[in-house]
Length: 222
Image 1: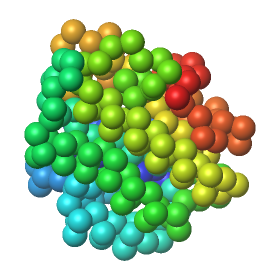
Image 2: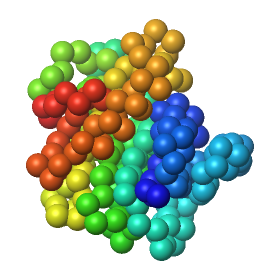
Image 3: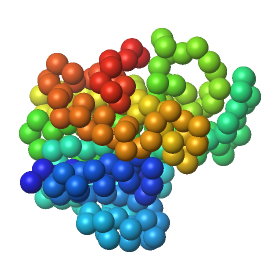
Image 4: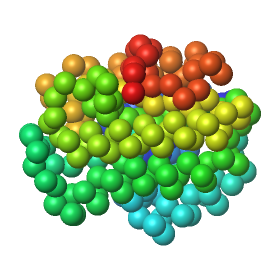
């Protein structure tokens, strides 16, 4: 039975990953911050762990909670959008801290704690965004979120170099998804996005390590 870890599974894309992996027969460990979300994950059949990637004390305790696991697939989903800015609107310090702590420092805290819990040939993905691509960028809306996703792409690329030969590490653009973050007018639902990403993960080879993919498998440039 494959072992899977989903970091940030309280709702939306993360929760849909949990549902689909459980339906496929995987043993799923999933993290959330609130007691209500943890209870819901347990009711689905996942092993629920309390984790707030933006909190130093909480994040530092992940390694002992997953001690003994050998995960075949890991998906780091936790993220926030921040202010819905247009143009060059300077973010407040509190907005900057919230977005960067969650979207960038969060994965930087989590990734080192996963190394000993990865099965040989594990596949690891960080949910990023096409909005973080510099070469593909044609708009400036949400520039704080864009900056955070460009930064997490850099974090993932470094992780792929360190873990080369042990795990295949990629960044994902999940598509514009109808979630609390994406809104009701988005292109696709979470079920379609997650099914696509799971398919991509299942087909990864060593040559894909350090790559950036759309949810449907299209390669994206940084």
